[in-house]
Length: 261
Image (cartoon, rainbow, N blue to C red; front, side, top):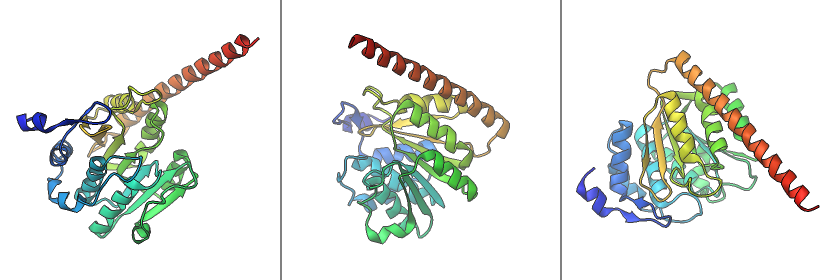
């Protein structure tokens, strides 16, 4: 990294360094082996802080990735207000093709998405990501960009990565929001993407955004047997951690019950 990179970073609201947008775009394109994303920067000027969701520089990265990759299918988990959904849809509209599937367990999501972009978006409201796996598998759909931004716990993040992996196209770009937020109670995205990447044998990077955007890429030439073995080990790990958490939760409930007596 250059001296300019370090000198131009500033501290964000959570105490993490945030790099200038043009450097974030350069980092993402170099790491993922994409064409330079900075030519799309002018198209990102209208992106502002309009939601409690992703920050502007994080939304800009999503926009740039879609513009550069020209995906046929983008999957987003965690629609929320639809701020990041809007930027993903804007990029698909600018590409002139492709569609966005966005899923959220809440029924009232995506209200920020403008009417003129809704034709490229399929909203899956009131739906769990497990149901989304079945829908895509039934349609023989394959994912070109996967953006995880739903519940940021370790178990949910790892569970989604495992569940959607069989649907990733070769070279699929995987993006996880809040990868620097593990210091907050209940967050575990950073741990999940690290363990997932290590098990699969992927390199990953966490970009210097406000909350940390983790990026990695599915193998261009997947070894099916090796990947299935890695995914099975991750499933076992996920089940073990889930069982441990249930045991701890039950023990705490019992302790509170006996404590009230």
